[in-house]
Length: 284
Image (cartoon, rainbow, N blue to C red; front, side, top):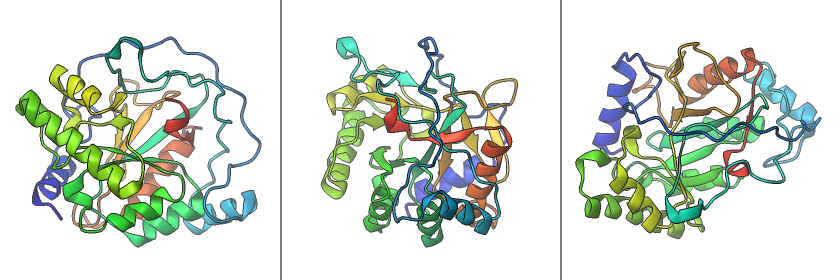
């Protein structure tokens, strides 16, 4: 495992902050599009991976000791965030405009490669997006191909996980475009979405991402730690369309908790607040 990734992950777990930035620093507020209604909910969970139907999914939730999430709504016919954006200046997004009680789950880096997490995601059929760093995933590219096979998106999180604000424009472009090439070669498609490590970016980041063929910078509104969620808003609640940050982390970074144990805690927070999970790439 890359030492810088492990060190950053451990620092994030131990650091108590007032904002829900996970491994991220504060980022400038971005203008938001007005919320628009989404389509009505589908009565059944959309199958992913192997067959089994809704009854099988509910049994899988019971196996993992959690209450089933409600089925997400059907993907909107027209995405509420249209990409690429007009004018060539890529947007910076922390939430999706919607009135549905849905959130979007993302996992970063790729340091932990727990086979039980693959089993969990296959059984629960939960959509999520992976923002992957090459120095963290290079020891086992195949692990993430298994998750991609469920329909989960592979997106760009740089080659080596630097703080991009400390790099010049050329170095930022190398980090972003280099990972774009590696992910396309390994997983078959070029990512459309980019997440800067620690949530740190500047206008050079935005220009570099655009030049590498990316269409949006994706940040987050909440971050999952071990048992608890950190919130950016003062009301400490999920809101419709929020993007949630989690990480591929294991017991050494999670004080003995496994990645599946952390994910169970995350799903309980979502379920207890009456939300369900939709696929981010269906909305932007």
